[in-house]
Amino acid sequence: MSKPSVYITRKLPEDLVESYREVLDIEMWDREEEPVERSHLLKKSRTADALLTMLSDKVDNELLDGADRLKMVANLAVGYDNIDVEAATDHGVQVTNTPDVLTDTTADLVFGLLMATARRLMEAEQFVKEGNWTNWSPLLLAGTDIHHKKIGIVGMGRIGQSIAKRAKGFDMDVLYHNRSRHREAEEQLGAVYTEFEDLLESADYVVCMAPLTEETNGMFRVEQFKKMKKEAIFINGSRGQLVDEKDLYDALVEGEIAGAGLDVFEEEPISADHLLLQLEQVVALPHIGSATKETRYKMMELCLENIKHYFEEGRVQTPVNDI
Ligand code: 8YV
View 1 (cartoon, rainbow, N blue to C red):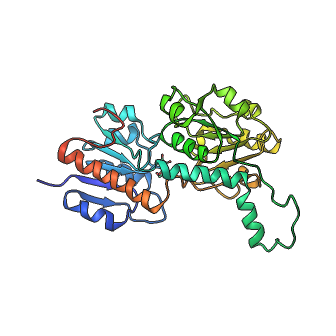
View 2: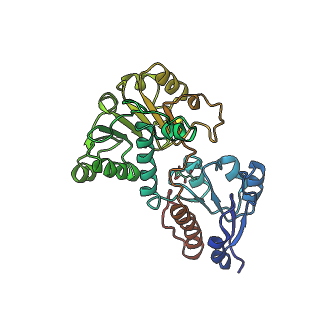
View 3: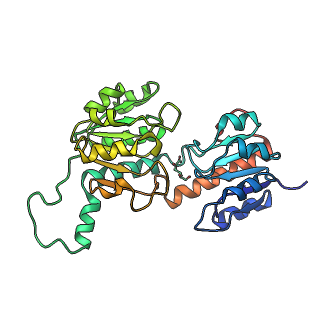
């Protein structure tokens, strides 16, 4: 019997892929620095049994309509807003994601981003490297305290809870807002469920970790920034589309809030002339929440395991939809 054919939309390390070649007929996009071209992805989808996709690959009706053999899509991310899951289900296509393996890694990064923004770490490093450290003054590069402050986590999923644990270690008060109450986080972490508006008004750090859905799209706009404290710092570790970037820029320039730490943007990658990059109170990262070698390997492996098991046993470890 011929092996199921798998198309991978980025070049993955051969040492990882190699062992799966025994059971899967794997082909990969081979240009290290460039994302797969849409026309190429559409062409490959027509003959593939499975796709291993990235967030930048749109899996929509256009792709699914032409993908007669396609049975599954393994997405290399916990989020799957790049995939029209309803359409995939209608086409009988199993979708999987990579939860759990990236939870702590992403929480580490988001908490690090909060610290970098509050304590002005990037500015401070630049100051030293540019040779400006020639004197000392009491308020030189003075930032804002983190310990004993209030963190408001919007989106108390796995990563939100993992951030709450870190915040507890810093003696912070933890507020959270979520579609539904999370009793475990309340009992074990002392996190306090708070209405969205109340959270915005009382948190010193507002951390956005909600997934991108129709309801969360654009949930942080001018009204929300105006409700926050003038000293508040806004952190986004989920998706750029949850935020109106022009409104965030205005809020920062007009002093409605004090700073922002952003790992994600509305359109990625962003260019150096992006509005928000012009502000020194913004710390910007290139969407590296889950980017450690250990975790990225685990994510890639989970995708390949899901594909292998789907074809061998008809089951996957981390399904997004019921087929
Ligand atoms: C992805 C992410 O790893 O998992 C997610 O949803 O946003 C990141 O962890 C990254 O975008 C690669 O697809």
